[in-house]
Image 1 (tube, rainbow, N blue to C red):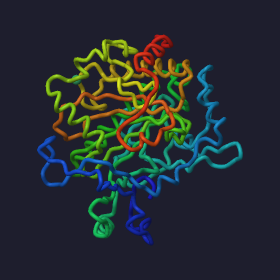
Image 2: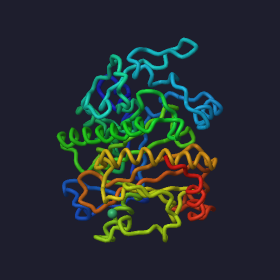
Image 3: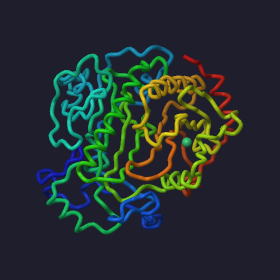
Image 4: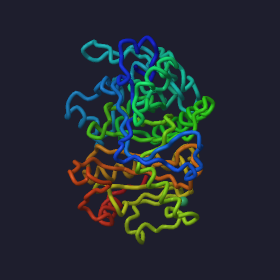
Length: 408
Ligand SMILES: [Zn+2]
């Protein structure tokens, strides 16, 4: 069931639970009153805790052999020398690429949603193929994730069959999972590890791919669509491949959203016209790390981890896909500076970047923001509630990062 395709051929001999499912936890799931965010009345919607359970995720290839292997890539002290081969090389080179032992790194099959910003294959296309060489001038590619958490295309007869057998809190998880990669191999976001124009191109390609997917989804009668763009950098935070890559989860199950997003939506609703991010000085500014023409970076006063950084566009935008070119270029430059400052402070190089956005179709007030969360081991009490214990005072963390920041 690679590429989120379930058809008669790959479903035979399988049971209902062998498909990607979305399971709402009955002990934390509540029905959304559809008047809340202008949601359509035809469907029952929930918020709460849910899990995507997808058997195909375990088939993902491993990109790092050892921990030392990974460290080598993350060394930002010298300029990264290109030419490294990985699982994506057979795609970007348009021919099968082999490892040093002579084994093929992948079969080269793919589906390309956007090559830089140019639309290539339909987000609902069904046949992966081998591409010819990607032009050297191309900087980023957005692909359909081969090992997704959601099913993108399901044979209607099979849907009928599965749905009948599933209890009410369990759905087939439907949606599109995207991976955006740099055309040439780069490992992370510091000064020496990726050129700014490549990172800019990754964001632009993601944006174009999101808009293409949403347009095509709406065409197919999907609506009220949560979109989650994120980066997992390093194996400890879920990054299975050494090449820098972002992902986007586009959930087409049309059954609601998680508790955290509900919290954000309700908080912005309560703020009304007085958007916190538009008016706050972030605790009298001693938590601000970097303010540019377009973005503000600061340490959040309620950190999820030590050195948890939050950032937002200065403009009140609801979604990642509304960002303009100059905002995106500035973001790429700023993120590189922040990552370098964290590296210079020797903060764990395994980091997540999470973009929090208003779902498509929701009539909600929202100011998009994102989190940079360095990896740390999590404790028991922290698993029991939406709570974290941090030891570093956010204003001190901000000062350390500010002092370590080199403006480029
Ligand atoms: Zn705002």
